[in-house]
Length: 411
Ligand code: DWN
Image (tube, rainbow, N blue to C red):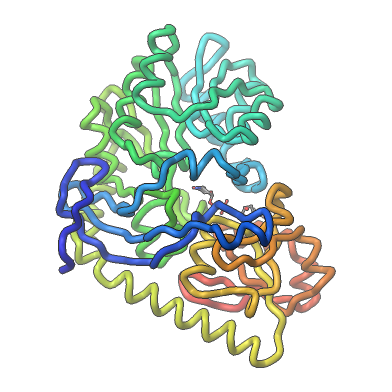
């Protein structure tokens, strides 16, 4: 059992956090570099992951100022995945139905990005408010008709909105609660802003999927926390909210849970089952995480050997997805331009940049048919089906994909 750390738990304040994985010192995963001149000054930070025995929250120990992560040169736009757009349109329509949303309602999204989600309500005449500090994304959202506050959400902003007489009938927080250092301020903000009878839905990757499928590359500095139902239940109850329902999306981002939270206690059997199962399988005990590092090192060894073997045999290799998870993958495994010639990505804002740390150039997906590499390492493996459908011509012409997790395989 490792020594306890001095860092207090972001949820319960426990100081006996137990580290179970160290990914070394890594660059910021979404900080794609604009050019070669930026390589030398690229900062790197420790990336260590720990378990809290007090509330079972898994979290990294380092804390990077959110402005560095999500404002300066933040290039992630949600609308470059058709699958993600479909998933969120379905969610929007289900909220309209379930909550009876209309022109007298208000839907607030925290980390509203480019309006990918809230635009579904705009089309229905339902008032919305986006909250996102990233300027490029907020500009795009406003072009889509989504009014956006260019701020970070938290207890202070929630109190200000409430004082202005604004209460939300629905608050949606997709892939953001894992990103905030002040977790309690965030949860308190939900409580302040949500109307009586309102619903908060929170989506984040599920820590069980991360551990069970060895999705270590979803660990990076943007993701301060990795949630279980146990950890979310403890967090929200501290702020007068209740975890009433949960949905699992096994194929979204490697396995995502959508937690349904509200100011009135109405806990479903599904939540009780999740809480019971997490205790049974050990999500609430350090031992469940103890062998994760060994499994991660095994993937690193297998993937390195596969790539070097292919290069020794004269193969050419590219990669798909200049994703944040891709940065963790290439930096932890040691995949540079000695192995991978370029990374393709549909996000036009990423073209002409270089991957953090390993400085692999990012180009348009058309390069796959122009250059016809023998293999393509799927750094955005979480969108494998969508990408392979999209790149069917490359595959039909003999191109092969390498899927790195849960175990490296060629498809
Ligand atoms: O939490 C986060 C997740 C949800 O999104 C953020 N902190 C940052 C980001 O993480 P990521 O970059 O690992 O997410 P994605 O969405 O898995 O990245 C996929 C990358 O692949 C994007 O750059 C877009 C690109 N892509 C593509 O080129 N062609 C995606 C699809 C679906 C495609 O068809």
